Image 1: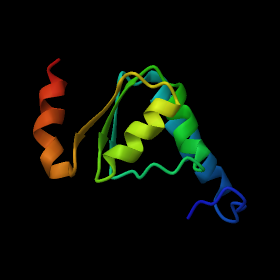
Image 2: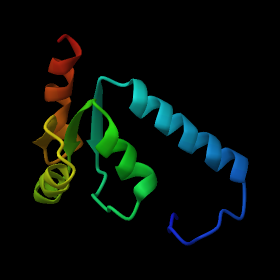
Image 3: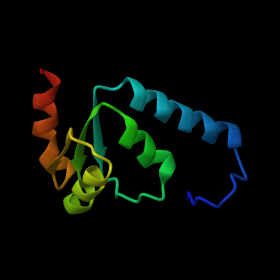
Image 4: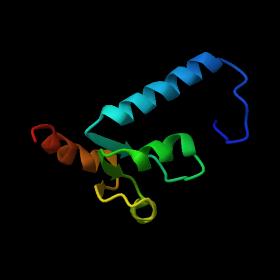
Length: 99
């Protein structure tokens, strides 16, 4: 479990690799789907790269107000809430695939 003041005690190289892969994915993606990810701004390793990316963000979850508040605070214009659950989002995500 991540906490900003917690040291990585085990598998530090693996954790660093995962973080680097996330950053690269965010950098090169044209669309990012945030599925079941709660907005928790103190998780800067996740939310700062998402705030900085030019990719369109599509939120799937039960806290769309929190997501839209975060998007507004970070001047994110291409940030959309598309569904409350993954099951509801499947058709929408599939329709994006062809566009």
